[in-house]
Image: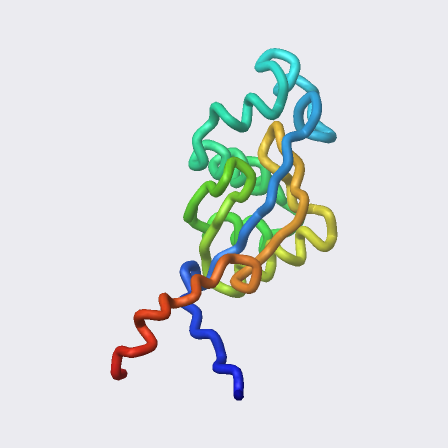
Length: 140
């Protein structure tokens, strides 16, 4: 019996998932003040809302005065979500997201304070929800 291709619904086009991990003792390369006063970095992440983490990510990366493309790309991204207290979901034009990917590859993309960036994922990383089997009988 030939296997049917599974139909999927894309939930976040033109987006980038920034997978974060709590940094022990504050942001690597930082002055250590983040972790010293606020307690463990993991607790810091749990008590901050996603938009605050996104704003901190933008603030950290808007200082690329030597790379105007990176600064413009960060300025043109938008907060889309904060998933499972570890994935910052941002949205923007594909050319801006590509600049962020290139910054990650060059290790110039900075994490929000209290975190380090584990990896980046795009549309292919984000879940594509399979359509319910009840949709199979609907004429289209």
